[in-house]
Amino acid sequence: MAHSLQASSWVRAARTSHVEAASSRSLRECTSTPGPAVTGPGSDLRATSPSAPGGWIRSCTATPHQSARPGAAHHCPLAAALPALHQAAPPARIPLSYVDRLRERTVRLRRLDDILGGGDTYRVYLAEVQRTKAVPQRGSFAGDDVRRHLTVLLAEQAQQAGWAAFDGGRGKEAASLYEEGRTYAREAGDSDLHGNSLAFLACGTLAHDRRTAVGFAQDSCATITDRTPATVRALLYERLAWACAVNGEAAGTEAALDSARESLETAQDGEPQPDWSVWVDRTELGIMTGRCWTELARPLRAVPALTDALGRYPDEYARDKALYLSWLAEAFLRAGEVEQAAVTADRALHLATGVASIRPMQRIAPVLESLRPHGQLPEVRGVLERVAS
Image (cartoon, rainbow, N blue to C red; front, side, top):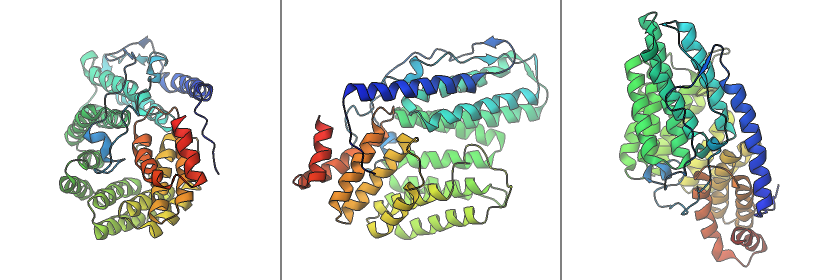
């Protein structure tokens, strides 16, 4: 479908108002917990503008030869409008059931990432990390197993906060939080989360050291065992495929994609999957496949994979779909289908409008520059005029 991008302020305001209303409802549902309401460390959620994009932020969305459009993420975070997050105070003796409640809360809050960018969610997720860190200061554990479960939760929360920092343009904070999550995962002996931390570090290193990034990704896959859930295996192999693609390793890319595909195809019915990897499915793998082949300048492989997967991907996930459409637009360009590339870039721009993430425009901007020499074509002229308006 071809969207007409209306850059007027009333469209942006209407979209922002809708998202803010949905976000406030979601947050109220996500953060309700039994017991007295208290605020914990890090509950100050004042809005601050995302920092300028750094090397980390370019890594998983734009390849090292691409540059971010200055000011692309200049967006006032919705954290300023979200209600204060409250959490039940821990009892003097902290049982496993209390940690389970915190985990359920983390699962609910993770859903905010489906509709909001990191510029909106970073302080929400960071505050959760800070609150969970404070739990041992307010009581004693009912056993070592309880302490371990809380440490595993901290690893999850640090990774989620790191992801939001990454998405919102806070490269330094993302790197620090990924390392923190890695430390907690090792302390808890959780190989799945340890592998995920290494995969995040691989993404962060791609912009400035591709070989090291591939090494991180290979190390993440080395954490896989027979007990690793299928979606975790697929996720780690996907990120290895991407690191190899950015490094120009076609054989390594294809092998990793095949391993990811096998992981999903051989999953046992009813096999429990962590909430942080449950989104990895056939559609996600198709998108990653298309991204990798686009990066490797193989558009005849990239276009079918992306077209098929994006046909099943809902527009409601605007940030991610805008990103993925940018790869499809690039693949069309590489295949010489300039008009189709322009139409696809227009769709991506429409979805990216008002999203508090620097990544969509980091990806779309180079595509638009590549379209400029073809400005005599009506489709290209139209999208460039809408960008300039």
